Length: 632
Ligand code: BF8
Ligand code: SF4
Image 1 (cartoon, helix red, strand yellow):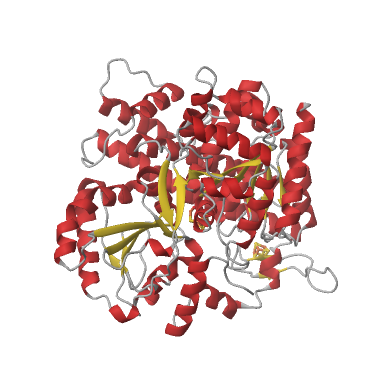
Image 2: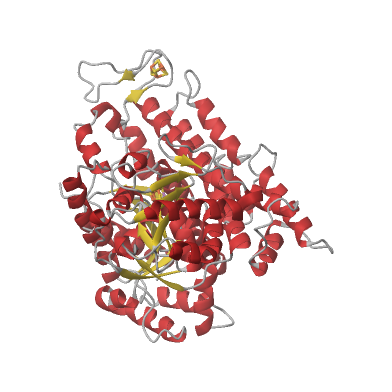
C-alpha cells in the first residue's frame, strides 16, 4: 500500500528507510494480519475470565462469551469504552485549562491572564455569572469553580451544554435520557455499565455511550472557551505548513500534543532566547513549529507553522534538524525517543501523567511556566550543538496555510457584508444554492489508509459541489500540507457558487482574493466552534441543527477521541461520515443503530464509506435531503 501522498512524508519515509529508522508504517506492517476478532469488535477482555471471542460467522464457534455476553453486547461495550476514553481525554484537557484559570485567579499562575476580555465577558454572561463589581480575579475564580462542577455529578444539566445547544436539541437529548449529570460521571457510568454483569442490552449500552459523548461535547466547548479567554480568540492569520518549515539555520523546537497551556508560554519565551540560540551558532534564533493539536493552537493564535501531524510525527526527527520536541499529552507516539536516539533530538515530556521512557522529563507547572519554558528551550539549544550536519535532510516542501477561523472570526468576516445581521449572507447563500451546505472535516490520519489520500480526494469532490468546508485537527493539518488552506485552492477547485461566495467574503475582508477553500477552525477540541455556528444558524431560523444542511466527516479517523467527537456530532443531529471501518461490524444490530436507528431518534447518523468519491456522493445526498426538508 502507498503510505502517503504528502510529498514531504514520502521523502522522509525514504530517508527513514535508508537510515534504518522504524516508523508507525513499519510497525503497522509488522502487525499484519491484524486480529479479525478485534477488527470486528468481537473480542472482550472486560474480566479476567477472558479474552472471550465470538465467531463472526456464527457457524460452529462460540456465540457468547463465558458470562453469556452476545456479539451485540460485546461490540456495543467496546465502542462505549472507546467513547469514554475519548471523553476522558478531552475532559482532562478541559480541566487543565480550568485549573490554570483557577490558579491565575489565586495569583498562583503569574505568566497567565485574561487575554480576551470580550470573550471573558461573553462566557460569563452565557453561563450566568454577574460582574457585580467583582475583580477579574474573583470572576475568573468563580468561572473556574463553576467549570469544575461540570465534571462532577449534579442534579442539573451541565451549564456548558444547556447554554450552547438549541432548545429543541436539549429537549431531544432529555427525552432519551442522554444528558449526563456531569462530564466525569458520564465516563464513570460507561465504565460501570460495560463491566462484567451490568448492561447487557446493546441498545441501552449505546445510549449510555451517547450520553457520555454529550459530556465530551460539553468539555470540549468549555476547553475552547477557556483557551480563548486565557490566550485570545483566534483571528485570521497566515501561516505555513509541511516539514519544509524546519530551518537549517535555527534551533528547531516542536511543540507537540494538545494543550496550549505550555506552548503559549513557549511562544512568549522563544524570542527572548534568540541571542542564546545565536551564540550557539543558529543565526535565525529559535524556530518554533507545531505538531498535532498543540501545533494548531499556536498556529491559530500566532501563525506558528505546522511541521506535521500525528501519523507522520516521527518523520520530523528524520529531517535531522529537529532539535527538540516538547510534548504534553495525547497522540504522542511512545516511539519518539527511539527514533530520536538515531539523531540528536531531545524529546521532552512535561506532564506528570504522560512520561515516556527514554525522554527527558521537565515537569511543567503553571506557577513557574516561564521558567519551565526557558529551561526547555535551553535544552533545545544544547541539543542543537549536537546536530550532525551529515544527517540534515529537510524536504523542500512548504505550503501557505490560512488559519484562525474561529466562530467569532467567521462572524466578523460575515459582518463585513452585513453588519446588522452577520449570519444573513451565509444563510442567503445556502438558501439560493450558491452554497449547497457545510461540511466539517475532523479527525486523524490512520496508518491503515494512505496518508491524506481520502482527505484530499473527498474535500476536492465536495468543494466542486459547492460545499463550504470547515476543518480542524489533523484534517486541517492534512489540508495545510497540500496547499488547500489557500485562496489559490478556492480558485482551482471550488464550484462556481462557492467560489463566488468565498470571493465576495475575501474581497470584503480586504484579501483581494477568495477566502481559503477550507476554513481552519482550530484543534480537535475546537470542533465545538463549528457546532456553535450551526447552533447559531439553527436558532436564527427557529429550527434544529438536525434539519440544517450540515454534515461532518472524519475520513481517516484513528483515535478514540475521534470516535467520541463523531458520536456527539451524531447526537447533535449531523450525518457523520467515517472513512475507516470502526470495530463494530461484528454486530449487525450495533451497525444498524449507528447508521439507521440514530437517524430516527436524533436526526444524526453514521455513514461508513472508505471510498472518497462514494463518500462525497453520500454526503452530498445527505445535504440535499436536508435542503429538501427545509423546502430549499
Ligand atoms: O486531537 S485529529 S490524531 S492530533 S485525535 Fe490526534 Fe486525531 Fe490528530 Fe489532535 Ni484529534
Ligand atoms: Fe468474557 Fe464476559 Fe468476561 Fe467479557 S465480561 S471477558 S465476555 S466473561
